Length: 251
Image (cartoon, rainbow, N blue to C red; front, side, top):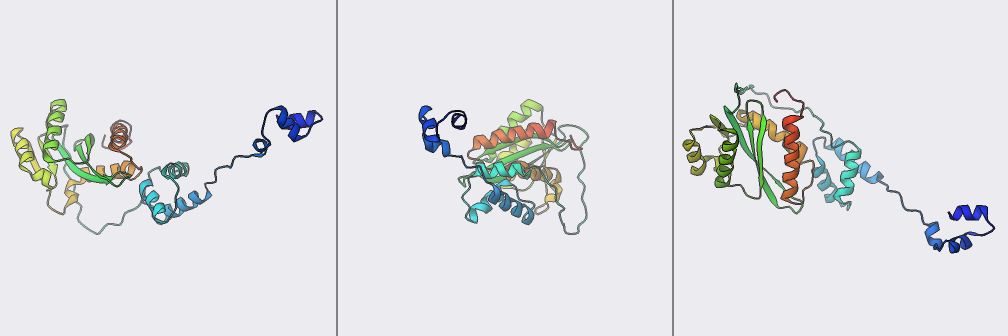
């Protein structure tokens, strides 16, 4: 408007600004455009150096290197670069004999369960209890909490069994919650067989291990969570997508 007045009427910029009740400093001010060059360079460098890193590891790496960008800015650029899209990388594994798990023939024959852990933005640790149906790798439930003990776990299982029926067997590792008398008694009460894998042989629990990797990469490592509510909400959305929209052979 100031430019129009100056070009169309015999007045200078000071007079035009005065007629519009506009401070001359406002006329000359041009907002700074966002310059994400440094963030882009840093994220590209990290993605090339550590192709398996998700957003969380990249963000903490930047913080450790002394950069003060907040996580919203970094995540905006992270998405802009397309780094939030899962990229498969080839894994080099030691030579070993492949052990194929027997796939059940129908629902609720065998469930697999496992614990995972992570931390919130304030470094407070939390756990998840992941439960899947081995028949089609359906995510039955992911429980999120600061602490998930054996009693909490069996109360959850009791609720799930009432909702969808019980399995014939549950496959787990030898963690303290799974070997506790609370869990073993609950399984005995419901006549559910417990199939413990051998210590140090996660390949014997391959279905849940593969599921855990997907959940780790696409949820836990991909975002920074401020509280458990955020973890539960994102996890719930991810489970919905995983079970109903995810293009993979098992579901």
